[in-house]
Length: 395
Image (cartoon, rainbow, N blue to C red; front, top):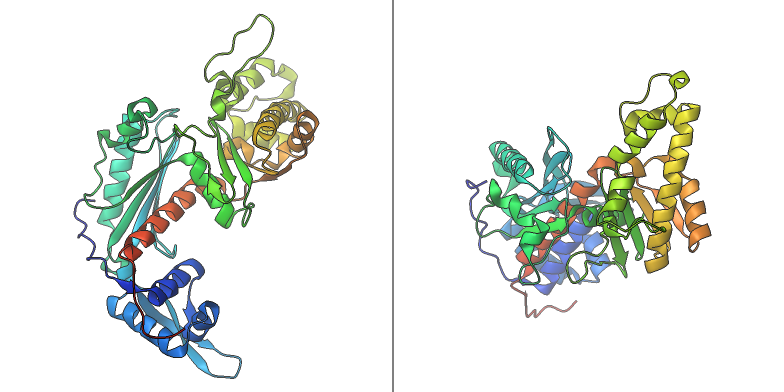
């Protein structure tokens, strides 16, 4: 996206103008009286704050709202000059991209299915990100305003600059083909962490301060939210449950990543196909077909899904024993299936402690919605970073 104009110089806004803008971004369109009442701002202060924001193009009028006394009031939202963000889920199977305003109005979206599955960050994913990014840039419209931040979710742990060896995470391979525009915030985050963020703001964990999001699909992963904050760990490895020591049994030695291999969809289907009987009909081609057969009542498919649910329940029990999150959200290509319930919570409670288990309802959009949220938050902080000026008006 090298053709993007550089964002305008960041203005210095009063504290009240910042508060008004943050409210519109967080809560969506509102009238001056509604915002003033919410923030406890006097009418003169509210008028001055809106004047600041309107002059900068940070707010715009989008209609009128009928008041309780029959009066109409102008309805405002984040404006054109507030700009937009680009969010990318650089996943193991797909690259998903969303262009949205800071208040998360969708402007453009794209999805690209990778020719093959990828368990680690590599050049093919980098190339797909670069091509999808440029394709989105070709669709850019003046009404989108300035690009304020870029967020990319990666299928690997992410080490913050200066805090570890980024080469060991393979995150640097993102830049093999993709070159981000200069002088713009670039947010890199683990994809499962992003899904956890989305669950807290839009999904079945909405408003929860403490929970774990566990992804079950081609790969395993956990996004851990404690006290309303993501837990990343010193090496960015918090939640890397694919590295739990496994197997543990006499005569066997744990191998790195073995539990992810065992519980991943590829190994699941190998076990299913190896045990599939001839009189059970045509064998499922993939995990989606397996779960569809089970949902339709196919006896052998149901048995395979039940055994897999027990294995997942054991994994959840391990996570609960370590962090006791109280709530676990299951996501990913397999994890979202309601067929895993109630086996998973029953087994987890029996092996560790009682835990509420819910299936994600965000589907494949969870990760891109989460990185979009993080990019919008970064863009907001950038716009507000010059600090608040002293105000003479009283609240």
